[in-house]
Image (tube, rainbow, N blue to C red; front, side, top):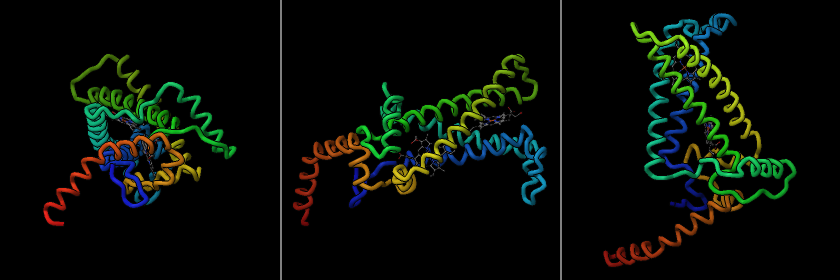
Length: 240
Ligand code: HEM
Ligand code: HEM
């Protein structure tokens, strides 16, 4: 934990890399995936100058593969990184549905919110919802890649279900993203935005909105105090 004046480090470089890597590849996958349906020719989007490529099945498919490679990389990295470090702050907990209701009620009525840990209950639910849909897309997408390999013939039932799941998860993911962006229409949530860019958020905000997390990081800081005192002592010895 490191502090910068009145700011607190919330999103590490690794988390930001995963978030924006996933965001960029998912946007590319949605745009190119819809191109294969093929929606853009039907609705004349391809007549817009500069948007002709959206009507080419092979251009959109190639770009879909590039997006998929990017997404596979960040998903794999994300899972291994947090499993190895045993970091599960964002995994849903028992009672999160009820707690989300109280948080939203408090936001609407300007009442008192329940004390929150690093993530609010609805953020943990949002993570699970987006995460499950991304995993469904990855697994059904891999089956579709195998189907596209020349000379490989998969049972038609497998191809049918992979396509159904791929399409359904696409729609659910888009709903999830609309919800994710809508969350920032609420002023109270906007203080988290700088965290996903610079890593740091306002200390006072953390103190009142994520009080359980604040207490935890304060305690961690205090328990590591002896190490700091030793450090400044050794600095003195070195001649400061
Ligand atoms: C395809 C695009 C995106 C995906 C899949 C995505 C997914 C996620 C997920 C799963 C989380 C963790 C759960 C949560 O806090 O709700 C998160 C956090 C966050 N996202 Fe996104 N996101 C996307 C785009 C964006 C964009 C464009 C912004 C710009 C405002 C943004 C801002 C944030 C912020 C600020 C957080 C951190 C909240 C915190 O510190 O607690 N996201 N995102
Ligand atoms: C956010 C993630 C993704 C979204 C929103 C998405 C969306 C779509 C959509 C809408 C289609 C066209 C409908 C269809 O043919 O079923 C499609 C096709 C396809 N997707 Fe994805 N996809 C995603 C991730 C992936 C991944 C990770 C892979 C590979 C590992 C993948 C591989 C494919 C393949 C091979 C096709 C079929 C091309 C063909 O018709 O031969 N997709 N995707």
